[in-house]
Amino acid sequence: MSNIVSIAVFASGSGSNFQAIQEAIECGELNAKIELVVTDKPGAYVVERAKAKGIPVLALSPKDFGSKEAFEQAILAKLQECEVKWIVLAGYMRLIGETLLNSYNSKIVNIHPSLLPSFPGKDAIGQAMEHRVKVTGVTVHFVDAGMDTGPIIAQRAVAVTDGDRVATEQAIHAIEHDLYKEALQATLK
Ligand code: GRF
Image (cartoon, rainbow, N blue to C red; front, side, top):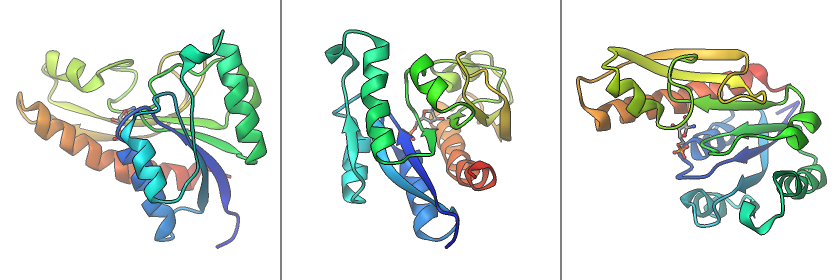
């Protein structure tokens, strides 16, 4: 495989998107290498998933740092050591600050479980259910300083199963796992 792009995946939770990205790499659908998983939640399940795949993990608690800048400087040092070219957010529940935005200008992407600009921020699926929308979806976008506001790369719609949050969540996650690998393959250079 040529032109393999070095990436870091940032995640705070279960890591099913991390897993889907890694599996896409393993079966040749995505020309990338996950050099590092970064988490702000050392107990998150993504840590187990990364270990099982033999991928190094940087787990740092923001509360151990005096400022967001110091927290991001520690991450940045490791990213540079690993020669990471792109940051891929996959359920990372923290706004990216100036330190990382400046060093990875236009090289940070995120996946969000709604058709942005609808339902940014936390619990996008819950927001969609509350508004009783019939269609929601998934967005992959570049990251800027705002909350889920950067330029959109790809979107896919998902029908909301009437009042059934679990079914809607499952449908969204299945779409996420497909859409992210396709959008990354088209975007990472
Ligand atoms: C996904 O729904 C993603 O869109 C959102 O957080 C969730 C992460 O899920 N940003 P997982 O940890 O990848 O399973």
